[in-house]
Image (tube, one colour):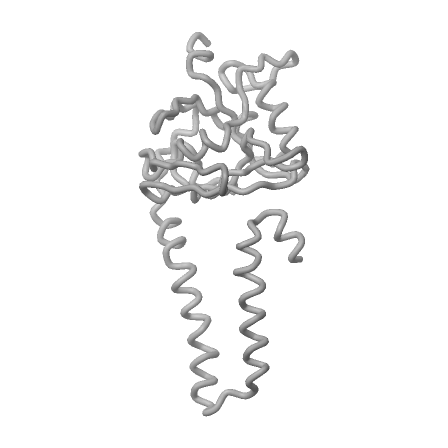
Length: 220
């Protein structure tokens, strides 16, 4: 299970979620039974509550306060040095998952209006890069001011991004997408709605949304 988790997450996530809790349990076994009994009950009830509050309160608040204007068509998203057309819901922004190569091919085949796949690939659309994804991240419809350090794979934001339109659909199961940026020959980066990035094997199936230069679709 740990190996499967590592495919989708950063090594630090694996350490925090698996290694630290198991280390704590090992320490509890080392010191034996907690006395007095009331302290054992406090730990049994209190630690899960603290975990829920610390780990779940802010993500839960973000989920409740997601902004959705109901427009899932073709959108021009501009700001933070990036201006891109993002594909409308359909073959360029599907509810189905795809491997990295499948996602790239789907973008290549997307029609100028983003509504169908052509037999002869127009190659107008493509996957966004990590840099474009981070810089296009939004919070309540406004640019979140993101930057990406490619040396450390770290992202920073002026405002914490959320799963908001026009970049995301609040009700979609998609919480991360492929980017065009490769980590190496077998791995590519994904962008997560909360603004983080990390690499996955290209054979993994996740979501995607194609982008294009707005001038290339202006005369559709």
